Length: 216
Image (cartoon, rainbow, N blue to C red; front, side, top):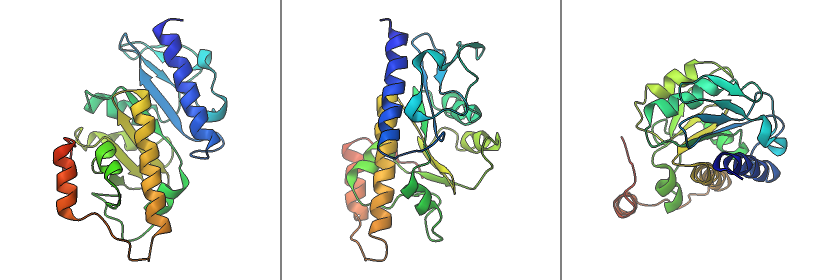
């Protein structure tokens, strides 16, 4: 099995794992990864994370020309915005995960730092998460909003919609977006309980020790 076939299998395996654990349902969510030749593999439009076919993933070459597979997700412009603005991006994942969407509905969340500082791990894996406004699904303006961040964020939360995370490879992207959802879940289940957050000095220590990208 060549490297691309291994990557195809890995994309589908990780997507199914997230689907089976309820992190995205129905035909929601989309996932993409750079190939070793600089091309791109994406989940096709209208497909379920629970039933992706490795042989039918949308394949683009290094110049963005469609090569094979089914037609790509309508959120391709959103994925491309991350690849174009973050040279370190090797994969992008977008979910419709319940708790992160619920948190995005709350009136008091910080648009510039969406996740509360509850554990070290969301800070380590995501840095600051930017909350973006609501856009219609498939609206190219979502990609423009990401480009407007000039590559300073690896993760955004689309209000009333779902999180999007870019990382160095497909496994890192999936791990990071799961951490985003876990932190949002913690935030929602402890909401109104006066939970103890990490202090600013503790956050600074985490950022320094783990060399976290912590843009303002």
